[in-house]
Amino acid sequence: PPLQINLLTIHQPELEEILASWNQPKYRAKQILTWVHSKGVTQFSQMNNIPKQLRTLLEQHTTIGSLHLELEAVSKDGTVKRAYKLWDGQLIESVLMPYEDGRQTACISSQAGCAMGCVFCATGQMGFARQLTPDEIFEQVARFAAELSKEDKRLSNIVMMGMGEPLANYRNVMEAIRRMNTDLGIGARKITVSTVGVVPNIRKLIQEDIQVRLAVSLHCSSDEERTQLLPANKRYGGLDELMMAIREYIDTTNRRVTLEWALIENENDTPDVARQLGHLLKRFGIRRDMTHVNLIPLNPTGGFEGGPSGRKNVNEFVNVLEKEFGITATPRMRRGIDIDAGCGQLKAAVKKKEDKEAMEAVAVEKQVGVGGESKASALDELKSFAVPEATSMSMAGVWEDEDEDVHVHVDDTEERGSLVVPAAETETSLESMYTERIRKSNNLVQGSIVEFEIHNAVNLDSEDDEFVDETYENDLDKREAERLIHLVNISFPQLSSDGEEMESPLVGPTTTILDQDSLSKAKKRRKKILKNLKAIKNLIKMKSGGKEMNEDQMEKIGREKELQLELESVEHNLQ
View (tube, rainbow, N blue to C red):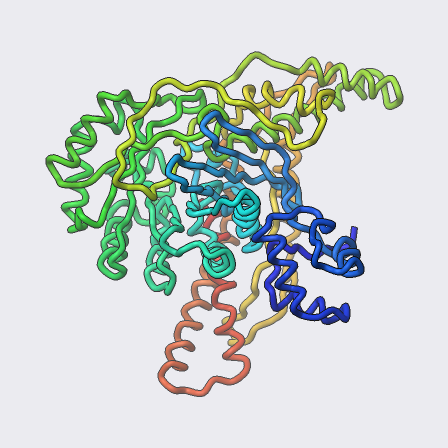
């Protein structure tokens, strides 16, 4: 199909230019975007102040949103969780959390998958697929905002705590955040960026002119324990580097930092651990009035041995921090537990359904061949795939930290909510019939199927100080493509001659470079990128000193962000 203009993400000046090319007045752009963003319309026929001829053009050449709603779940507490399918088949998740005081908070994804590998997080076990674009991040927010506007409500808060590590997609996340602020009117201090501790980009955030809030997933107060739970801890210099960056952030911005702490029973929820945390902050001179600890009881599922802390341990942990160290701490209410609202779980359910359908179809074709009978048999096979309830990957419950003065007690009892499938009249739909069982049978584990994308790289030739176009200089690209294709092929469920699923040969994260030759090449590429970034910094310094730059030098300076993004991707694959 022809490429369509996305009215949920297009900038008004761009739409004005398009309308002018259609011989339409520019003021129509504001009218159209008002219908889309402020009134939440989803049909062009509802735009009653737009001429019919223009509505026809809009129907032909534009769309209201590009994210395909694959699945939606609604909790008893009002939390709404969605799985969106992107244009390339990747799945991401977004969550809307309503509160009794009128706040409406959206939890947004920044990547398809994640390379951080946190052991209690479902997304972390999926591996890293690709970065989300600024439009893909912004549209998640714009959809919720538009739908709430239609109900005379307002999206008040954003937390970048969905799938992915926001600070590992720094440029795209910050571009999307600026649009949330300017286009949707969401205050910068109502937007929270969460990070596992990407220290270089925490320092970048300090220099930004937009006052977003920072949350750090800490969870442990010793390097050894934190590296076991969050492998990225070692990658970014450990707790020493992280705590120094947090202190620098507070001292420079004068903004409070939230420390996220997923409570795991008898592991990191004891009074002694609380004292270790208090002493850690004290040792680095971090102001106690500029930190707040969010305590999130772990959601108990089967992929991780740890369980949630009991109320007694939670209260003791809070008392130690507040009475002995003067550090405020709040036990958070877990939102959407009955619909697996932690990041990654809904995607895992959808992927499991798709994989099961594909496997059943292959098995049926082998048994009866391709034809009319095979379709009916495939349907019967698919109906019979319901399996006993299995456990899914552990994760910390979805939460947000706007109302930091309210202490919410943890409720140990949870009821099951209702699941809503977006298609209308789906009583006979397989998706409607089996969504609940698919969700329950989510048992994604490390080494399960992930998808890959080879990113184009900016090629800087620092040897002769010239930029060259991207080319295949040798057979590295070909070998790397063959390696990734091989990984994808062996990731899919394999069927034996009798139709039984064979054990996957994959073990460990699939984002890691597996062969020594590719590892060596990646290290050389990283070294070259770092060398070029250093050269660019020298150019920037010369320019700031008054030296006149030629066209080639200005072009090099303009590619600094692209190189930084490529460096992030290379470092992801080296872990």
